[in-house]
Image 1 (cartoon, one colour):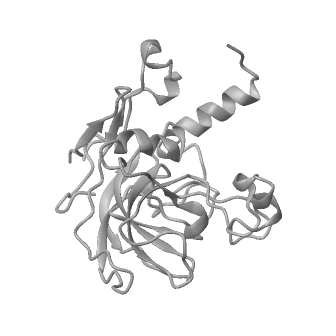
Image 2 (tube, one colour):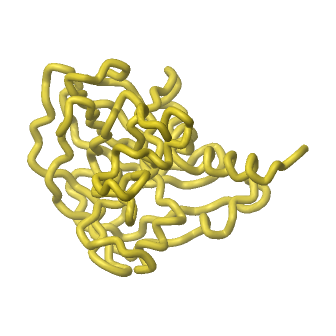
Length: 246
């Protein structure tokens, strides 16, 4: 989040009407309760996105991120979310990637947690639709490097379990710490302890598999590419399941 921000005042995701692609009403116009205003940016479809601007950090493989605290949006209970100083995200495993968040969406499914319709425990950092710049990588990471702009799909997979190899990454058998659970996600109820990206930094497990490297126009088209974190592939998947035809 923006340096110096104290509290969240009106983080709003504005959905599109039919002329912009007919986004369902659950995407439209829900609000988190006000506590300080977040800057927003509009994409080519007219949707607005919260812009989470991380503080400056050295983007070098050999230079570790040494911060102490970061601003993050924290769930404190039904209808209670606040921007707080939280411990900085950091590299915990050799396969981790640390991303400085530059854009993050508020998803319609965040509303279920915000309104208390899930078992999300207070203290979770929200945000599962994220995009940013790689700030640091673990020693085992080979496919992404500091300075790369990456989009982060909301489901976290390992890339090598049976389900991941068959393309069922939403049911990864490795990432969730509960062996009875399959699948994990950032900042989401029941999907593991992984903090979300409505924060300055995000730890990405199995970064080689979960970081989608973006092309050279990523900065100019950031608010379009962030759609790849959830909205666009979710809509595409629905149309495929429905067998929609021209």
